[in-house]
Length: 98
Image (tube, rainbow, N blue to C red; front, side):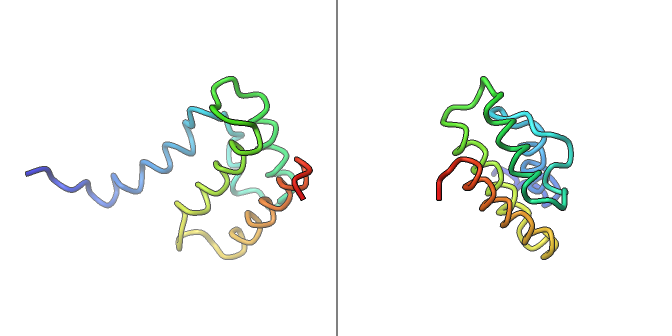
C-alpha cells in the first residue's frame, strides 16, 4: 500500500512550482511585493520573455498569479491577498482585456 505524502511534502510541491515554473521565470519574491501594478508588470514581462510557455502571455501570467493565490490559501495574509487580487485587475488592464 502506498504511503500518503507527509503534510510537509505536500506543501512543498506548490512552492517548487512557484520557484521553478517551466513556463515562466519569475522575479524573486514577486508575490510578496506591495504594489499590484509592479507585480502585474513583472508577470507580464516574464510571460512575454518566456520561450517555454504553452499559451499566450496573458494566460500564462494570470495562471501563475491565480495558482499562487489558490495554493497559498488560508496561509496568505489578507492584506497580501487583496494586493494580489488587485494585481489580477492590473494584468487585465496591461493587456487591454477590459
